[in-house]
Image (cartoon, helix red, strand yellow):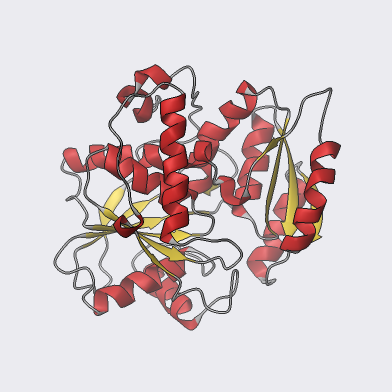
Length: 331
């Protein structure tokens, strides 16, 4: 698949919302045997991305990099933790397509992954600014923005995780892809889709995209970040902004009427905070590995831990559950 399913659904936005394919679609879906009462499936995004990093960040960049070009920007200015997958993916894919990246980096707990990620970031070609904390990053933002103006061209500023209305289109697209897989009989329509939530764009895009695609699947967001407001109201607000963007750029469709009650969000699996592992996440990571699924304890293993506990409590009833694996490491 080379073109965007969103363009096939709304051909009127093909010119106003350009798309750049960066991975091989569709990503696979398969049954998972983790001893759950619910019928468990996985949509594995880990292999998505044809460049130096994979996973859900690449889906966002497929819309954000063309938007940067449309705006005439030469640089993307964004923010993340010192172990940021988002920042690394932006730097690597941006460099491949002629766009520089500048990153403001906030401190997070240091482990082997963060140390390795910092080495990757230093080798990525990105300009790194160690701003350490959220307050210092906010204070430094105007200076960083002015510093990255090149030849009168302003940088394209993006929030953490690329979770802007344009970035959220990546998972509107993925929801359309999932609907096509359900229609093709590759998996049953899930009652619930469980995903980690670090900045909100993936959950917001899924919530909107599932509605647009006609699926009744309910998003379950497992919050792993304590530095951003990520309750259901904020997720729906971003989904509404993405819906307005589609209309502003020319798409015509009935209002989805998405409400906070349509999304389940939980912070029960966050632990001490962003980047801190938990015993439940470590256990979930090990259980997943035994079934051939590679996770990590900052995002995806916490989401799986929540899924396993909710299944044990009978929260999913008899409906199939889909786990979205968004982790996309590369050697």
